[in-house]
Image (tube, rainbow, N blue to C red; front, top):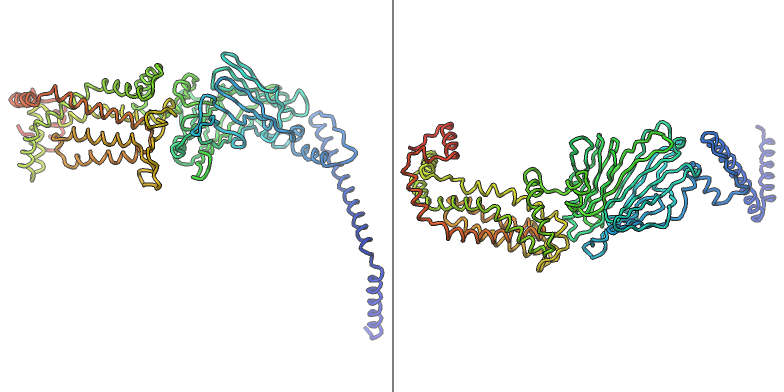
Length: 627
């Protein structure tokens, strides 16, 4: 490029720059231009949204025979929100917004608050029970619970929790044998097309009927859908003084729908989830003394998913529980799935009367321990409770009744101990003579027992036979709602620990308080150990063990039910009295005389079945029995 061309280009550039500066618009002109551009963009957006909405409305009308809704001439915030809801919810768009209203239905024992948002139960109050603060028991309330259906409709996921239902009235109240129903209805674009929750309540029961009705939704719900999902989530509220004990006794139970009607549960001490791949009859969210059970009139389809999540120390709730049910749906013009709730106390008789093995939520112990509670302890306790006596008196009479039942076994154990006491000098002599020869010592001891007609386990076997009752009571008292908030002397609540002194620090293995009934139980256990092990117990290690056990139990029972410690204390006091009573009737000299007579008899006449088995075992091991 020559020199003149470069100069020309430079001059043209100067002219362009100068003209752009000279003809640049003012600030007022720039503002006006921006306003004009924004207006044009808004108009274009409104036109596009209008065209899209009209297209979708036409498509919906073709698919579901709905009339195309009139489109507003001018768009505003409300109409834009309506368009968004229509796009998100389809025929349920009208229920996408509204005002939450609370409606109460109640009977003599329950007050159930229903909310129009989700049509669900918002809270339940048990009228005859108070929590540890003296307030009405509310198992859940407000946002601590979610309960609703999820399903596909018009290629959309519909969740009823977020939609507004229409209540059938202002609430109902029933008494005595009366009953009433109340409905929450979710319309689907037409009066003859809706989803309905139907609640039923009778006058004096902890049972709330619940039915889901699908009416005219067969053209709305996806044709390839064979079920709808029912989700239930709750954060269980604290009701008792001892949060640790309440969490330990709270979990989810369920019953299989097979012929065996087996009841199972998730772990009480750790987080757990499970997918149940067979049909179930019911699922329960159980707390220490109260429970909520959702029961299908028929069965819940498979699968059912359940989960428990324990709260950490600072959480105000006991546990978070989740359940997901499968409800069958067959695309009929009208379909219903009937269920009912049991929302009430873990009272054995109430649950058993309700049916469906609901009483198996109460952990009375496995095997023989559960049988003892069901067929002995609970019937006696309920009979005494019918007299409306103080529970301190009821437990006292219950203890005496059980002790009388066990009296033959207790007396037999005492006689065996008395025989061992009489034989102690001879036992000591044999132990001293053959202390360096363990095999010979064993042979001589067995020979002495055989000749004297004494069984070394004669005192242990009767005590082992009493063990099922002791363990059964260990399970019964902490689970007995009858003892809840019942006072006795210094104990304000027999269902939990009776603190007479709150410590400013925590002692590992003991706690941060002092339970007086537990102290009394421990002292009485040591006393009865002293009485029983005075001279009959020959094993020093066993003797120390017997004294160590009460100290260990002191820490265990310090946080347990005061009613349980009170029962064991009474049982120990009665046992000490029995020992002195037996002693006045049993003559040690007479026992010694009979033992000496037994020694003079031929060996075959003095062998007990136990001794015969013992000798057989000894011979199999190569021991020679002394003659």
